Image (tube, rainbow, N blue to C red; front, side, top):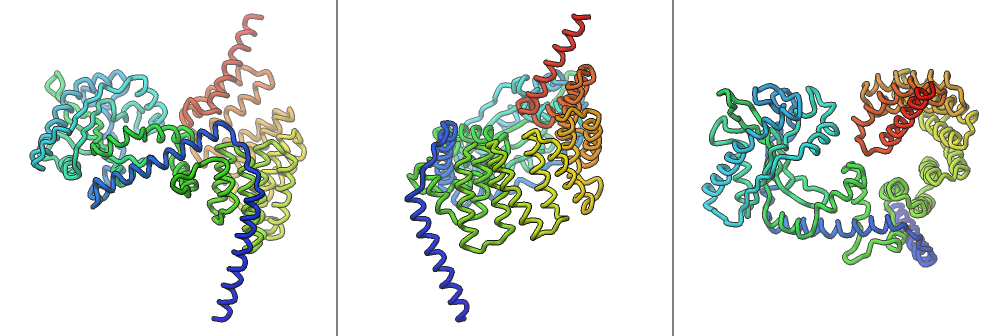
Length: 537
């Protein structure tokens, strides 16, 4: 007991010391200048957090018993099995093969769908003794063909069975706005168990009262499969989308422009909403009325005691905002915590690694290497020479030597990393695909094209075995091989490989990704070169 008191007293003494250091550091801290882009981003976060707070409060007011949030839509429709029976059908009852077949079926399905939805609303009113004049049913026009084509290519091109167009469920769509929790629950009950058997069935559902969007918006989003008669006396199945809103929540969302915030951040993080949720959580320690700006961030980074949060903020500032000074401040704060609460060497190595990565992003190669050498010294001492972490650090230093056009040093360190991996991993481990690709890049930069091609081929074989033939890394390897041919003046071979790689990148990353745009630009250049050669001959 006495020892515990002594330990507590020591901890309190350390905390007092850190608090004093915080106050002194904050007083002397120079507030960094942030970019206009970052200032706008921070302003959007502040508005987003306020919107989320109001949306959450509105939901709590309208559904205090959380009947909507706890409504069970059913596991089989929360994560449906995408088999042939769920593919959109042509008017002849076969899976659609083209956009024209899909829209031909949608034209016939639309009036049937609208009749079913209106009947559903009437049943809800009858069951709840509520014929609310404010309730609204809206039937949208058929989804635009260009947007549908884009969605089929971006989201469903690789889904089996294909084609991607057969998985578009929102060509025919509509929405219902109800004024009460009771009505929404009754509507979902009728969708789960239709009174008229065979009229429709619920095939997909999201309960966003349970899992709201990032902005705090909540609704039910469902897809129903309906039976549609055709001109030959037969019928086909068509899946349509239905959104079911709470009027009060929908109205507040519109007033606050909540979807604007959602789309802004979703675009900013390339659709990686899981990453976005994490980043937002890191910045949610904002008091009411606190302005989220450079001064606030400096204060936060000088006083924060949460090592995990600081680690994520380093990545956030460095990789998303490009605010390297703030990333360095977060690293400095980690050093302070590490020094005051147990200077574990491996923890120190992790901070050194973050500092190195930040310098690397700034293209301050010598500073980056200096910190990575500190990392490797600690790792060799604490983990031994055959550690996977040691191998990865050798690889990271080699990448920087590549940037400095020091190919001999890079190859030496890639070789060290490779030798460690050979000892501790299976020969077909995915990490070898990374090492072989890096070595291919280095040999290509040295003008040793045959050696480069050999390493690229080895990398492709490993990547295909681990991830399949349509993975983005396979696409990038094809592009690298194409560039290898291009640099040798073998333009026909280069073009063929470039096109193959770009198709994979387009399918996996989408048309707006930087890798896709660069590859497409290279293809245009290659075609121009081939055209010039033909003109010259």
